[in-house]
Image (cartoon, rainbow, N blue to C red):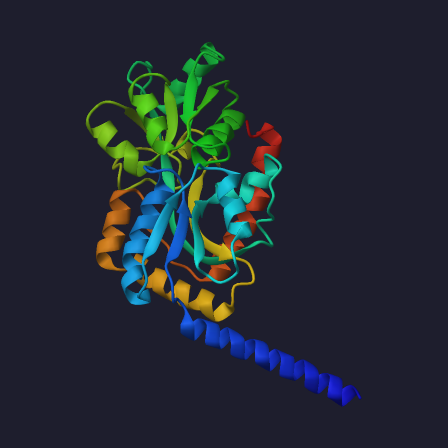
Length: 318
């Protein structure tokens, strides 16, 4: 009897494996979609680079769907079929959202990592109307005018939000957040003088700094940036400060592993193509193109470290 049970289990396992292999061999047989942020954001740009790079090898169109940043994107993926046809281009804001509000998905259970696609750091920039030229001067100025300065950020929990909140907590200043829907509108608000400061992705900041419309004070990474030669790190003034944004590609949990492996292979190939790497670098995005396991480890680490920042700062979604 026991032998029959074991044989049944093995047979079921074999059938499941066979179905997974068949599914992978047939994949894809219809268009794929990548959910991303609104046009102008980093996840949208990344999604379009990937879509362009994988549609040919996969033999199917890859459609980028722009959705407002926030839990809506995660809920869409959580409701998708576990077949690999729905992907999401996202940052840590997705897997950190449960620390800030009630969400109808579990980032640790509902999503399957495909690759840590790219990483980026931010640059602390100010409007020229703010009379500061360094991080030290900004701290002193903010302390002399508590609550009078404001900063732009995209969605709650985004890098631009968490970078400034970590900065505020470490140096003890009161700078008021002005939220925008995405990085593009936030940059417009800063350049127009509606807000005075921002931790901006490097790509959008470079042309504005070169044109003199914004003043660059420091980068958020532990090491200086090649995109801003000679610009110091925030950590040079605030020891221990470091924020790096992770951009991940995920799909629905329980997607057959052979399908995930195929997606990983094609996306990594697309990201590491010389022209794609150059386009991404010019946008301030450094290619990582990792294994699914590496993205899983990154998510676990960020939920531990940045989750604490969110709790300590009392950050809550609007």
